[in-house]
Image (cartoon, rainbow, N blue to C red; front, top):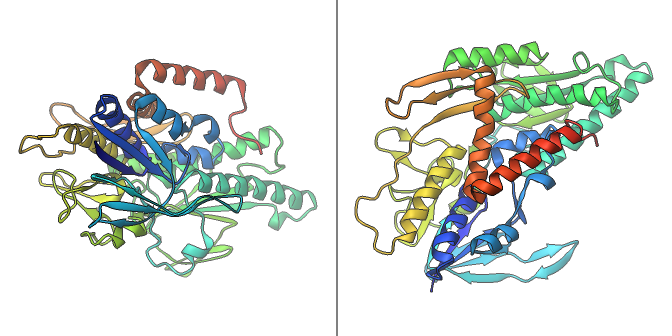
Length: 432
């Protein structure tokens, strides 16, 4: 039986494993194996809601073992150390828990290998960035940021109560005005208000919790129309957030972010959301990579030089002959997963079956009540700008589409109902 190994349980990897399990795995035509270092999956576009405390990942995440049992694929928890292309096997690092080795170093064979490794933060060689900033690559990092933010607010409230007005503030600097940076800034502003309402801290959320977004370019959200970018900046400003565009970061110190103009921006917490690159493993495989360490793939998402290896999502670099390089977005990973699920299920795939990326647009949340974005017409391809309640509704539907791919219509509806009921019963943010 052919063994298809998928490394990485992000949006693309888990959707691919689920689809192949329901086709090849269920009919025993192939063994489908998913490998991830974490025990569960959380949709990466919503990591900013974990960092702001709006979402509890333990409630929302999908357990890989449960998904595997329901959809006829196998799951192995572990971290890939190396790939033996000649022997068609991967090597997993020893798995430890509480300092004890649970499983030794292991080697697993494959007939086809799909790399869905995601991405890591790109610090662009800015001095001090890697040492002094927080990032949002996974749930653990998002939770670490949330705890640091809550603790900083409580500590500043204590200093303010003692009469130390100069230190009775929290300064959060977000480097990067893309979707992650803008969405986190908006949610943090609302979280600060909610925490004050529940008396978790004694700060004035508008005056004492200072949030800044630093963007190198002329506009926030450079992938959107400038009109939408201006609208987003205006909304953030109305929330009391400082928006600093055309500002390049030159270095980061423990308590400040320094820009190229020589200004130092006080930072009790610094979050880096300025760019991504491929994980280090991508550069160790002997396969072609681009300047940000992504694996270059052809029109079938196969790595040139190895007919057994495919790559998708943020770790892959695919250039569409019509639309150019595809961006690192969740909708790209979804489309590539669906394409590969169809391709790998066909033992005698017809010639000319190539991946074609279709850009359906982009939506960005501006907090609980607002969003902006652009949609592409299904037939004409015309770009339509959306905002307000319509954009907010469409933004929420993106996650429902992901749940639909993982669970089907019935379970997706149940998940949506449970989330709605939970929102009515618990505080809007995690309080501690």
